[in-house]
Image 1 (spheres, rainbow, N blue to C red):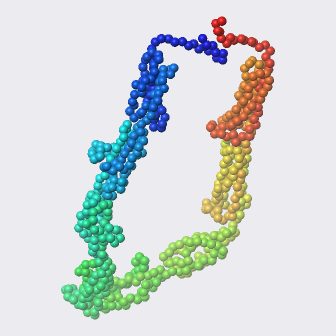
Image 2: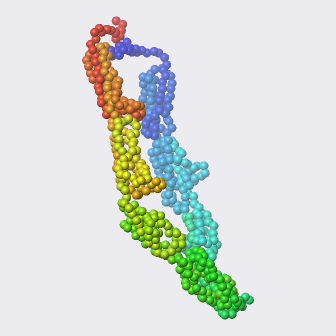
Image 3: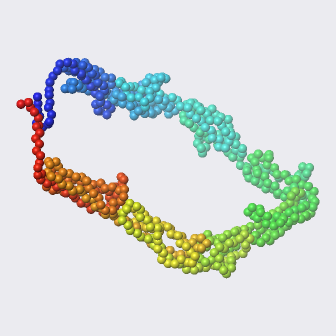
Amino acid sequence: LYYPTDKNELNFYGKSAGDYDYSTQYYVKDLNGDYVLHHTDTFSAASGVSLTDEDCYEIRGFTYYSRKNYNNSRIAKIYYTRNNYSLEFYYKSTELESNAEIPFEKPLSSYDFTPTNAQAGLPDYYGFAGWYTSKDCVDGSEYDLSTNTMPSNNVKLYAKFDIQEKTVNFETNGGTTIDSQNIKAGDKIDRPENPSLEGSEFVGWYEDESTTILYDFSAPVMNDITLYAKWIEVTETTYSIRYVDEEGETVFPTRENIAGIVGKEVKATALYSLTIVPDAAFKTLVLSYDKTINVITFTYSAASEQSYTIKYLKNSDNTKLAEPFTDTTMYSQISVIAKNINGYYPNKATHLLSLSSGINEYAFHYTPIEYNINYNLNGGAVMGNPSSYTIEDELTLVNPTKEGSIFTGWTGSNGDTPNKSVNVSVGTTGNLTYTANWKAKTAIKLTAKSQTKTYDGEPLTNSGYNLDGTLEEGDTLDVDVNGSITDAGETSNEIMSYTVKDSDGNDITGNYLISIETGTLKVNKAEIKVAAASKSKPFDGIALTDDTFKTTGDLVTGQTVDATVTGSILNAGTTDNVISNIKVKDGTTDVTSNYSITPENGTLTITQATNPDVTFTAAGYTGT
């Protein structure tokens, strides 16, 4: 029997006969180097059991390190270190890389890599095809490092390389299409049939896009490749002009082998005689590289009275400007004169018209006359008004601006009454002059209103403003004032925008010189007092404490006060009940900075006891 003097408890010790339960715990090192419980063996035996070498049996992937014999709780512990093994990479018999000291069960994904052809001593057209456990890389011996961990033995892996397939593309550069070829690296390209391209002669296949390096079809293909067709354009050709009657008989000698350029349009003019007329005054032909089809033929018939028509068209789009003139003549050639058309000038004044048995027409083409527009801005400025116009133009003058002035309108070519909306309509001709007229702008001042309040948790805003000055009769003012503050402090109340409108709702803000001034929104801190509780009692041998407090003042509804009250007294006397760490929160948000806080300590008082009750309590019984 042992009786302690510092605890109200008794400890009894004894021994009884019988079997006991034993536990043998086996610990192994994890991959981080820390010992973790691997498994536990349990058994029952009499007292006095000790560990033997037989208990330290082999665990795959681990090596016995040390042991601790059974303790008073009949628990023994045996410790094992984690084994390391090697991971070697080969291509056939050539070692590519070796990694020793890899812990058992460690993931092998970090050791994965793609060997280079240089490491394996292979040409570039071989490609890596994976790791295998067999030296010959037979099917079924694939090894995926991303999903395996280090086994309890050394590992050798063998790289597999395959000959890659390469693609040969043929870029014909506008010619007929040639199909791509897929061949094994090292093989040669089957030369395709030559492509064709109208107007060009095929030269051959080239390695580069600029067709400077001729491809050698006897060379093996080691990479994907594109071959480019090279062409020589057939640019020079010849053409003929024939002059025949309706029976096909020649009436004028044929002009042959006239030099020309493929793709270019040539124009031939008919030859004339007093007795015969051609089917057309002129003909055109776009030359082909095929000389046999480059023939222009004029067909002639006996001269007779021929009808002709003269047209008057706008040069830009062939719009009719005046009614056509139609007449007849026995002559094969006549001179025609351009008509005068208001606002336009012709491309030529006269024209020698050659008649044929076909349709005889000629068109005079006209261009609009460009007239000047002059401006007298009287100190103003404007962008966008043209300095010239034509009879076809329709435009509205852009009104000018002038610092401190209001534009009252244009005078001049539009009349003597100022007009703010001047239009030049289609059909107007002649030079124009316009003068800008002005009057002084009205000055006004806008001041955003200011306001102050005590913090109440609500935003302080004021959309009001003061107007210094007078609006013109019928004008109205719309002002957007923006400012807001919730927490204690101050901020600007700013005029964000303003608009002046006339009685018709038109924006005439530009008619005023407007200055603005910012107001101030201010939120003062709310005042609160946080007082620690005061308390007293007669002495009773128990410490007196009170951690409560009371808040008075302008605390916003819904917000709460947190504080720490510290004070304690055991014997008769008085001490402070100190309040500190005062915080005000709105939910979880600290809003203390919005308050001016007056802390007030309380007092704790213990008075002397008048009739103390004395109680004696035995600490224990020893039996004597």
